[in-house]
Image (cartoon, rainbow, N blue to C red; front, side, top):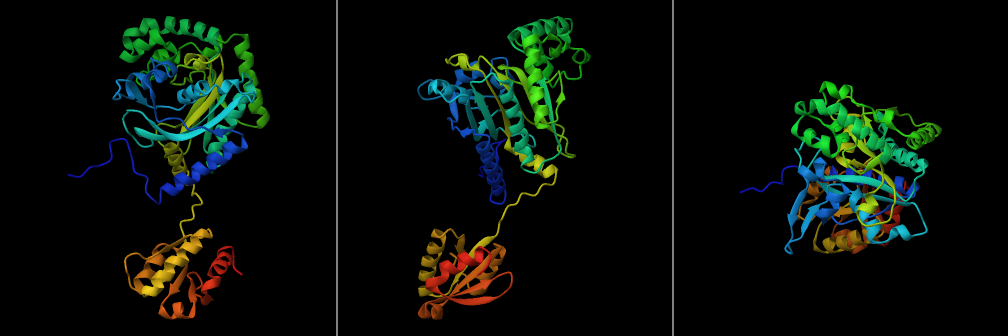
Length: 426
């Protein structure tokens, strides 16, 4: 019986993994420039963290979490998103007491959601995200938005669109909530079962429903922008002003709603307009939140962040035809013939690897012609050839696979010679 990977998961094989390494390295470097530090949290947490942090009314908590009891009878959940875990760590480790505020984190790691697999959406997926905790300054909202856009632009993507909204503070949201209930209640029986529940629990999420998106009542739903109080309006205006200062283009969508319960004020998504990207154009999203730190036992602290799926990032790169500068060539391939030459080749390979040079060799006992074919398939820049004569004379033949030129080099000088060759020649 053959055993395949579980549905909604995938193997990332060599040839593809180098692309993942490249984008991850670029994202880490971008975060370094914005002065965000990496945090690594457990892959599973107590279920209560996500129930309280993400929100009981969300699809994530109600339908999508991988939850189970451990051997001690405790309910644990594979993390479906990154923010709740970051906030839990922020509280547990009392980082809020540090004099260096705001606290600026980034993370990269696997997340798990039980949903219908489709292109760019898996049950196990890799998420990159950032969180900035401890500041109510609209300027840091603009910084997060800029970092989010740069995450894509630095990869070479151009068909991007930043969509922005304000969800207001608690007072504004409550006024909007009541208006939504009054608007949708006459149509309650026409809405899907989920939205009928959402209308009582969190009516803002009715606007995010995929099933009812074409219902006529959606087009005439009250806009949150009409219910923003003075503070919320001024906050939103400041965020837009800072984006204008940076020359970042955006569009306002008053119906933009994030799928998690803890958002307020700034909410945003980055969309791909690339032809052939797919029906779901959202690349990433995020926003500002308050109350989440308090919900998991910390002091009143606001935050803002965003998250992206690396699978969807790679999809967007493919849709725009962006070729990542991945060097798949091999520096050196060692060809050895004879028992003594084999021993020396092991020593030479180890020596060159310690010097920072990429080296491979034959481990199948192939003849010389077959070894050269292997070197060619691997894209070796140089082939290093050892036989009985070379061992006796303490030399090694170095063949340039591009020019075809071959030189005999003293074995004692091979490290220095290869360093010079791979740095651009002597």
